[in-house]
Image (cartoon, rainbow, N blue to C red; front, top):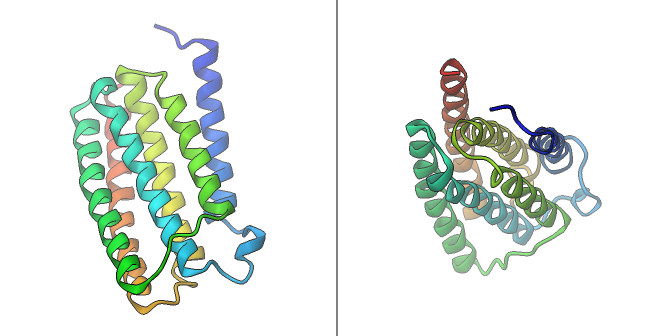
Length: 188
């Protein structure tokens, strides 16, 4: 079965939006309100937006994925990002940090919604491949965001420690996503 023109344009759009996300959210160009660094409230909002993004992608997997590797990866993302959300919410509550959305967290959510819409149009092997590609790009962007926006600007000591612990977790997720994508590519 050949992909439709609409499916191909959606994949092209997905790649374009993913590259824009890297540049705008985690890349070199900072939004104007980040020139002095995000506040702790902005950092909490960004972490929640990022974790909820991956949870939303994982929810698409059960009815659409064919690969057991994709199913297992989505389950891992559901477990890990649920735990991360609980931890950052606890830190925010204990330290009186109120999540504050800003342009970066809102843009992150918009990009996430677009990816969910595109992924929702696929199933089977095409879904598996698109999901793996989105997960690799998402984790690269998240890691870049940690390095360029979150880690350098977290002011609260407990939040700063949490952000430092995010980096190896997100790096491990990225490595797992890359392995999943490579395994899928060899099965074609």
